Image (tube, rainbow, N blue to C red; front, side):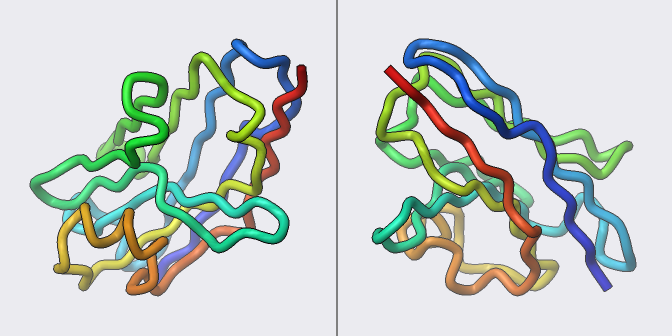
Length: 129
């Protein structure tokens, strides 16, 4: 019903930039489906990075001013431009979506996407000094 495929991860030095992309396909790949980026570092719980719902865009405090999320509804893609990367940004990054999500962007970020039903396979981002 909804497939998500991430791309764009890799290794970069601190201060550098990377751009992640997520392509959605299937029945629920449409502009009304909430989508977001989440990440999980080894030994840590999953955390929200940025979420776009039908009417809001929400960022985690830790990435505000450095990351920019954008959505191309014509292509059914979600992008995450990551600038001024820090060592602590190292994690597996996941794209997630849910066509019925209605609890708001802030909750999605703070809960690490607990109510999102569809997830991509993840893409690794490694930031080195």
